[in-house]
Image (cartoon, rainbow, N blue to C red):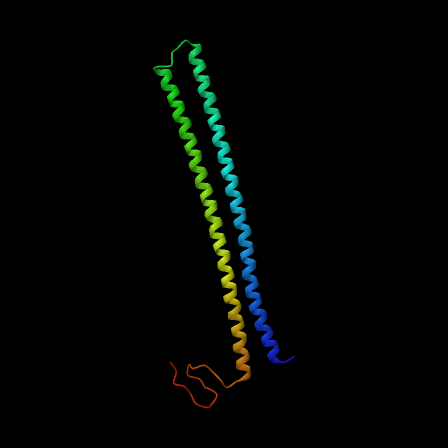
Length: 167
């Protein structure tokens, strides 16, 4: 096996390795993004459950208050009505807080999933660029081995004994 074969094989392995690592990173990112999406769905379901539970609890409290006022012979006006109105406002406030907190959590998780997917796609590109760069280095090494007197245009020998002026 000659030096050319070793260098070309090295270049091919470098390209393949870079591309493979990019796709592996993307695959891992997709899995993580899927976990974030599942968490967002679970958070949304938990929020809906909590909202329904709070609504039931407040509705039960309202019924108890109405029964208590009725049992005491009080009419639903004045102070008793203010108490019922306050209970209704508290219910609405609590439900809105649950909705807002749930929406914020779900939004953060969905955003994390989106950013993770984006990072995975970027890893593919980075892997391809890294692989091509590795292949380019191997090709340059091969070229230098084939023509040891050839150098860059940065003021070194061109192989013909003539020196370029540099940049």
